[in-house]
Image (cartoon, rainbow, N blue to C red; front, side, top):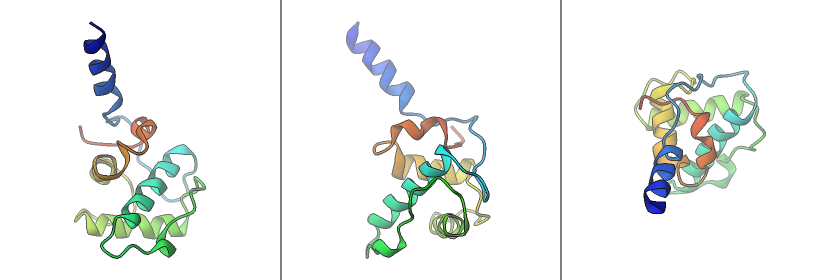
Length: 112
């Protein structure tokens, strides 16, 4: 019974929110920090990592975060509109956040 409860808990916390609101330029708060952490994880795992491309995790979606999101979107081959919606959120969640920042699951919009 304990194993089943643990498995159910792990499954629940490992999925992002399909109802999380889109994250965009001008926003601030924890959701933006999640986007910034996803970007920094992306930069750290590039073929040629460049620490100068990392963002300050300040929770403010300004010009640098906008540029990072658009770059990330182009690399993920989704529309580079600079808005973290379900498609971009899926990539950020499944490729960058679910292990390193599982608390972000409720803040990142996804399709599933």
